[in-house]
Image (cartoon, rainbow, N blue to C red; front, side, top):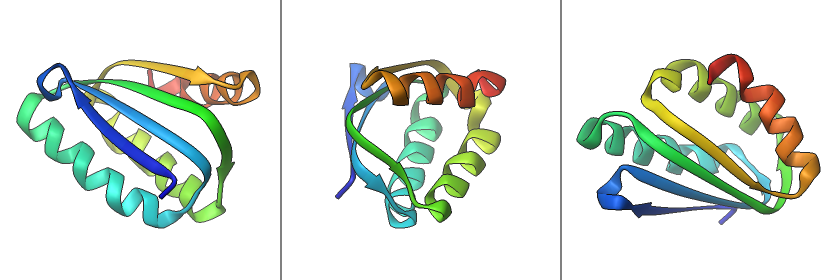
Length: 98
C-alpha cells in the first residue's frame, strides 16, 4: 500500500505516511478514514511523511484535489516532511486551501 495512517493524540493528529506513487485506490481507503476521524474529533491536525513519495497517478491527483476542496475547513494544521521537491510542490498546491 502506498499510504498508511497513524492516529495520535487520541485521533486529533493523523500521521499520513505516503510512499511510491499514489493511486485512486489509496484515496478510497484514506478518505473514509479521514472523514471518520473528522466526525469523531472535529478539525484534525495532519502530518504528511513524504520521505519516499514519487507522485500521483492522474486519477489520484484528482481525488487529492477533491479532498482538499471538500475538507479544507476540517484541517486545523498541516505539516509535511520529506524530500524538498515534494515539500515545495505540495506547499504551493496546498496554499490556497490552508
